Image (tube, rainbow, N blue to C red; front, side):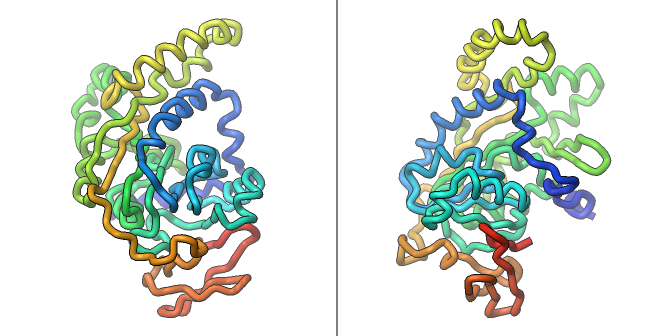
Length: 310
């Protein structure tokens, strides 16, 4: 039995959960990620087609929408995608931003459909990261920004030494944590980079982010207010110095060099023209209400603003 068999995909729509609520009171984490993404997304290079893998409610769309001719958010949560449509109504209405509900282990797009991509705060939900990275990587012909939650960051190593689990922290196997019904996975950075290399990408470290995560919740509000500039200065200084070891969130730039030619002749076509059946990879026939596979005859509905492949 694989980890994917043991731990099903987390349903973020259960019990009326709204992921936007997660970010309430997390000003430091938002600031830290914003600083990293503002520097790193431009390093992906030129792109016309962009995919935000596990892009939730479009939280990071502001980094790529100004440059992309077409962008697509893939997410498992219907609530997230509905909120993304509310957050970016003009881009969705014009067709510049597509919304697709799917499992990242079975993506309904053809090979090399996108020039560039990002995957942020997603890998910790993926029990079979080897398969998921392969599935995500096959649709990217250029570069992508991969946010890797690592287990061997500085605090993790200290905890591992104190609890006698240092060998487990340093091993290539993922570390599984979390509640009974909601598991999270943290990885060895080298193991993820080796997998990306095997998929045909060259990798380099981009930034160490959230190096002082959760500090705000551990001090009184008044102390946090005065200490925030100091901690933000420390974060800014260590995002480069801490690459590979300091923070729990390590950003990796993965590129194909040279990038293969796009198999799609028309760069101005709608994003649906690049989609395929997630089961058999056959082409899809679209009408306003549904998409039908020409190979296995499966049908997938349009649910409000998004196409539903879950």
